[in-house]
Image 1: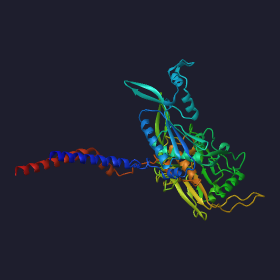
Image 2: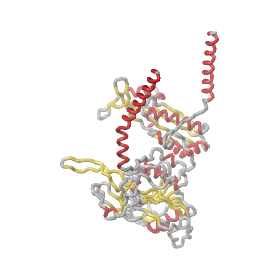
Image 3: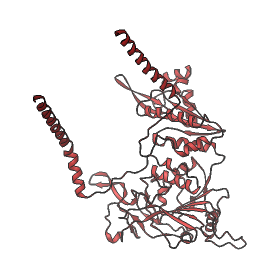
Image 4: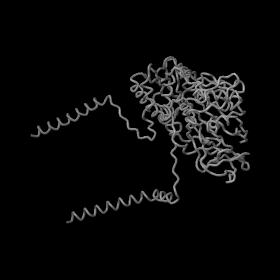
Length: 540
């Protein structure tokens, strides 16, 4: 009888193990992931899935990843491998990837070079670059200086964590994978770039008529140039816009645009192509905080489309602090000072594809905007960004001293101020035809225009991550290519705390201080009463 029982136990155990093995075999082709993050940063976006399923030609991704990277890069490297595998599966094999450890492909000569140290002309010990390091440097993938614990000492090493994406003879490089939240956007945008026939062209009206492209807009040029073609336009020399331009970008002209330039802008919009106008009221010298008034001459054109640029500068209690250095006796003190001219609203405005999910966007030295009612027939207007209700408008002359305390007389009537507006629809032509020129269309068929009262947000000093995401979202919206907008904003959404009353604040403070001890006391009392009740039942 005992033998039969033992056999029965063995049979049950084998049956359970067999079921587990069968379940594992059946689940080999199944992948499930539970993404509990607010922005779903670990779930492929619909735009990525559409890009992968629509690939006509193979895309090759080479990931150069050093083995045994220290944390947190090791976690990022594992996540990169998972993402590449998912791209491969979702594209039905059209995305092919290879993970390469640069140290594993070194030749014997390379390993010998790494052992030989020489002194440079200044006496520092250096070594010659290996062939693999030279190749990666040529691709634009830099090495990362790392500190690694080896037993009881810390050693220096150099590692790699970059990507090369290629297709159809085109190549794009992601020099360094920095954040898991932005990896999908970086990868998908580069796949889209190497697989499309032509990158859209942006005509950038800057140069002599606006902020200097090389000194003030260098980061903007690099940002746009990584995904689009950018062609500078100088209306003081040639007041025309390239015929093959897909988008016009007007950034803070210093001098009024002439009639020919205004006519070129009007004709560009009447052709149904998008345009963005960044028009601050003053140019600010960041060293002296002196101001130079700007006269761009676009007020009449924009007023005909329903947008009015108000005078003055917006100031807001929701702002970014400025780093200020001042002399305090024999010492120079550096401190952070809230600066109301650097407006940074916690919420940008009503929901819109351009701003959805974005937070931390800054509008420095911004002019207030407003919509003139009624709008032209067939034109729709939407607010992209709005200040807080505590904002006001300071009129010239401006004193931008960060230590100056603004009074109610300075700010005037307080209330929310529009900072960015979007127009679309049948915008009417505002500039008549020149003598001998054919009459332009009376209205654009389907135009898209964005007006922002702060050209400074594009300058290098203020073009942070959030402003960069807004810029690229504006480009996509104006080109009617909105696929990447939501993905680009991942990890940038602000999570501000809601203001609460003093009573609620004190209640929460007491709950944090005394809540846990009271819970422990209550748990102890309940346990004590239960044990007492059990003891009484046992005695009976």
